[in-house]
Length: 211
Image (cartoon, rainbow, N blue to C red):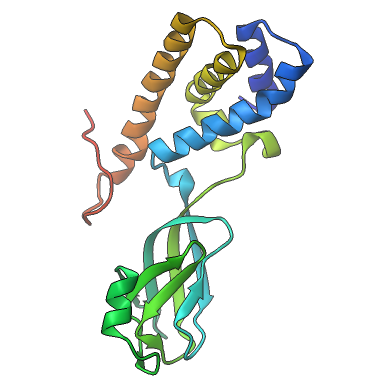
């Protein structure tokens, strides 16, 4: 389902083609995409970024589309990975209170919404790789997305919930669409939090049983 098809379906289901309503459809769609993203951890929402640390700089900027980290690793000259442990800022400030304490970083923490603090301070321009949770482009902007192609029911019924809420529609109809939306989310969670994690052994990742 592409964006044009989704828009047409929303108008057909709601029997509403008023200008003000149609103008709000992009909002309904983006709100639904946000709901799905924060409920289900699909591979779609994972991304990797590789960059260089700056010598004697204990701060690392995150990518502009970063939401949350999955892992952070230092790569040596032979591309061997050394994963950093995620800690609180207080831990790093206590353990490495002197910025002149340098070496290969072992720990990291969120300093603010777009910066990591590392401990100890990097002693070289090391290569570092961040695997992170990010927000992909909306179907509103790209016309086609993985959700539209592979999870059209979740996208459509979620949009209908938003649309009928906007219209102040009948409560039983909103409940019916919300039920269909949640049923579609169960299937997505089996994929994102179940089937695609059959071989995951590290703790800290959501994992649901798969029949």
